Length: 348
Ligand code: ADP
Ligand code: MG
Image 1 (cartoon, rainbow, N blue to C red):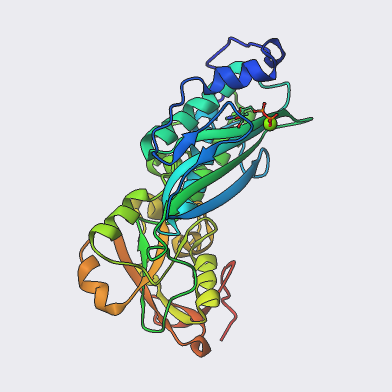
Image 2: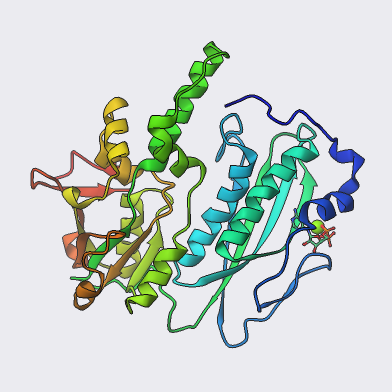
């Protein structure tokens, strides 16, 4: 897992900055009608006509947000794009362009950046977004990645964090907790590898959760599904930090409360078994784990029939008045106040 599979090392200095940018971006095409010009001038030119423009950005820092000892650079490129597209989809908008800015130290050869851009290219192709610019510079130590994602939407289609009303249903896409547990598995293997570099980890039983950590998918498909079902959420957010923190954002900005039902939280069987193995509570992981990049939204109760039975959409609770506060209703039917860390078991 940690070995260098690509022994060729071309020093970045051999190419020069312009040669490097050209080399890395030469195979990217513009496919979006709104991309008038992309890489190569002082700035890209976009045309969103009468649509609203959506802009989102994230900065990822080596050692803080990612660890290259188990994160292959291709996956890092892919994930860096995903975390940004996820924010655009969470506005119920379509992502159309990205820029990618990089700072790397001289420890990175050209081949490493090629790997990174292979991941960016795969993300662009799969999600139909154009790479239209970026910046490339050196860092004293480590790698930094900054991605900007742009998107567009009709102003009537946009969904904000505010807008949830009491009695709206709280819905989540996919399942939760996998990305966090995948990280626990990777961290554990890293420690094993430090002690015994010849160890061959068997990650096969954990493939689902490791993939959730290393190769998350932004839920463009869910935005498209909601459109097909003619459901416009009343509020929406993507799950980057953990379910409870995102619920609290919706509650605060919509000025409502919430009842979240523990037994409704969707968990993959792998998440349940890995949580047991790590002696962790799977509900706690779903609430606080983060990095699942699923969508969390509220809908009017009248729309329930439209989403009912869809295996990708789970109703996990409902909104209440602000005065009632935000609570987890446990399997034992006790009510616990939600906090950004998960839940506060001493409350009430
Ligand atoms: P400037 O000095 O005006 O910032 P640069 O030489 O940094 O220009 O960039 C030249 C062109 O290459 C610009 O279109 C810029 O957006 C693009 N570019 C630079 N670095 C990257 C990168 N890492 N990924 C994609 N495009 C890049
Ligand atoms: Mg520049």
